[in-house]
Length: 246
Image 1: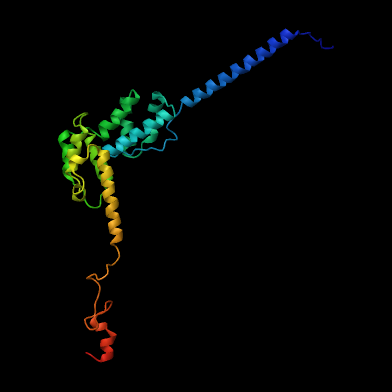
Image 2: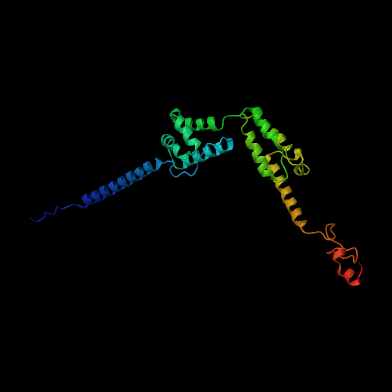
């Protein structure tokens, strides 16, 4: 039986083409929405940050900051993050989480539990003791020293000190080689203090390099008392031996 051709006007053809285009656009949008949905359901499976249960404030805050950043970048929901956080624990931290996981009803509960157990808030007097416990030695760079002290200051109650007061607290702990060249009243911010400190370190390094070779006429150089030449002792002097001078 021959197929019967249905005549179509130009207007009907245009309508058909428009309908096909709209259907294709709708399908593309649906696929894109499906892709976004799948992407939003991320997890910590590829996260490189791990926590083993160190009772150290800096280690705990570094871990939390890292996983919070990863969570935001990967668009992981709070629900999925709470389910997958166990992937990031190892050692004693993994054992600890098994015992407390039921207490974490929300994502922020999990973070609070980590801080409370592994980095409990220290009393202010203890933080001050740690700040003043050690002054800067000759081998510690000013950047490293100030960074460590400011990390301790950050553990104090919010707005306890302004920057000027914090500078007063840390300035007195600096090595004398910095305080000789940096007057306290010349620096208003930690940035200024570090900039001047780096200049001093650079200058000191240049001095050490320039003075690393043996100085001419240095006292440590051997001098022969027989011929008055440097580089050997009287016992080693060939002129003395040739002359038969014993």
